[in-house]
Image (cartoon, rainbow, N blue to C red; front, side, top):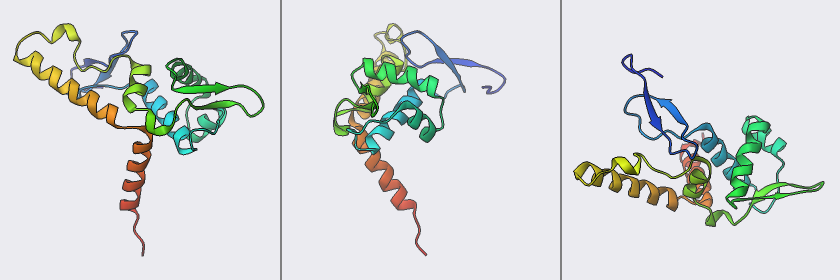
Length: 165
């Protein structure tokens, strides 16, 4: 993306060191992997969590590539957030109840450590202290957002926006 004719790379904290392009000053960038992963986890939570869903069904409901979703689901299963079930009625389901899985766990399973600035760049001065404070607040907020709370938050916003005539 361009902003004032300049491009700026913003690290998303990925384990593999991949960085995305973002507008200058836009802050943390979450990759498609992180966004699709959260959408998959929310969809499974919406179904009650204990019910399995095939990746084909999930891909159709979320309008995303089944092949790409498979890679995302594999990472989430490796982080013990999803459970894969084989057989005729197999698929994926949440490994724990929706109120026991945080957005932080999901983001870190897919993107790596949640940090705005590499730890080596924090330094000991006032700027480093400020970055550590912001990162702590971000981690606390992501930890406080459980899948169940995300569904409730969406329901509250959807209810507030519905007008009856």
